[in-house]
Image (tube, rainbow, N blue to C red; front, side, top):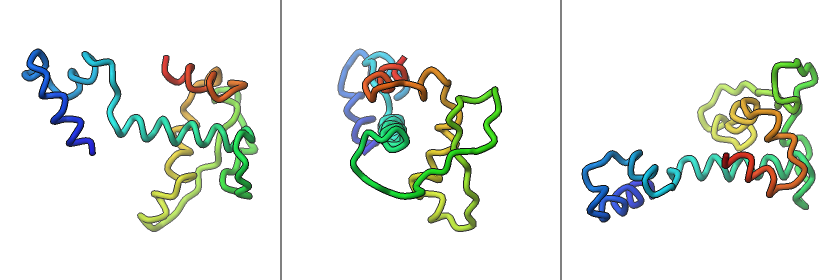
Length: 119
């Protein structure tokens, strides 16, 4: 799918000689990989704050030893030995979530979370 988006941006004559990243900047778009990551972070936010109706006990574990230099809602990073387990949603999103600033993860609503992520 990323290849399709890449080829589609080359159709515009003014952007033809620019890199794919510059195409996205000029068109004010983000890559599909970034869109997928954004979607996963939004779903994690909804799960962690009870905005969805799905009960998935223990999907995420919050870090109990929270230090002052993180976002205040740090997720526990689990260690798995298989590559398949690394693709499991809570595993591959936890490290990214832990890097988000506190003003983003402390949002009250989903729309506020989205808006703060987009800045």
